[in-house]
Length: 238
Image (cartoon, rainbow, N blue to C red):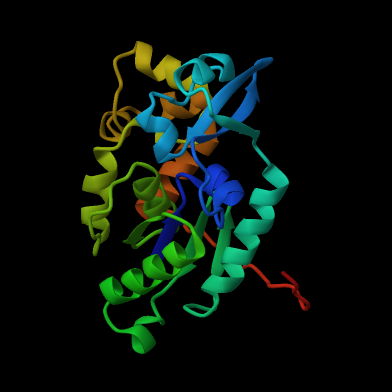
């Protein structure tokens, strides 16, 4: 099988901003531990110094005309499902990876669209026309492709051996771990997946649970990773 990860790094912002003629300086905020923080900012806001992690008051001190919108998870989910339905023109199997990613099984798509690079270019162009910037990565496993896309590593991956080498260079924050667990790995000097893979498996499972080992095995293609496909609704209106 061949998987294509479509990761939308600015999805919370673009869901709210796309289609606006002149959005100006715009940012999206989230509530985290009782505080409101900037999650994402558009290019106009970033040019004025607005960055993720700032509180809105500090961000407005840098950009007086900044608009700050609260993140809308319901709108993001609806937009992700619409994009999954749109991707159905390229493959019969599209899997949702909320909050802002899709996985497409594209082994059979090459018969219709030719080289994988041509297919990726067509999908990227279509997403741009819809108002979304995306990172696309094709790899032998769905989770491996997703981790590479999240880490902004868009090198082509043809074999599992290449996949392992590329995944080994990724930072640990692509893993499905909470901040406490990531900090625990950092305190023992671990910085990359490659360093993590060299540790004894029994100790990792005891300290971080079997799900971590399961994720690593699925990403590397050492364990099956079945995916359920998105079924578009019978009726649609927009």
